[in-house]
Length: 137
Image (cartoon, rainbow, N blue to C red; front, side):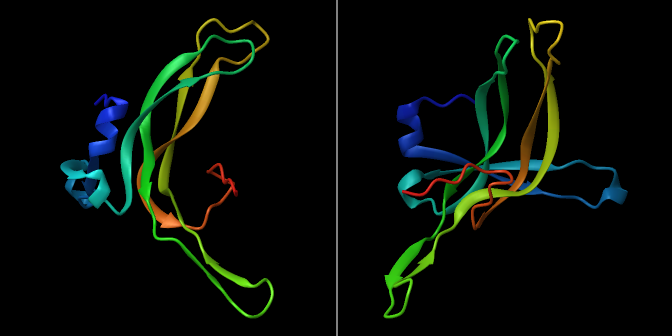
């Protein structure tokens, strides 16, 4: 699914994964629901494409599943240090599996293997630098 930037403003695809019991031998079944972005609150798995790069190799476009969404956040002043109470949550991974791609055109002394996470389930949680880029302003 390829979305244009202008399309992202109006629609987001929310993927709800329904898991079957492992003993049944059935796989996960994705269910797709569309909603207006200005109405969407929460965190969901979404298709994401990026160019995997590392020194000594050519880039490779990878399409995977990543976390995307908006989480409830707030700050309020308090009379005691640090004078503010914060509740900041980000949309981040709850469950992942790891995938590996082979980058093209690598020098002989560079491993062509590129490892990246694939989102299976996402949730709103405190930002962890273990699997997310956390920025403060």
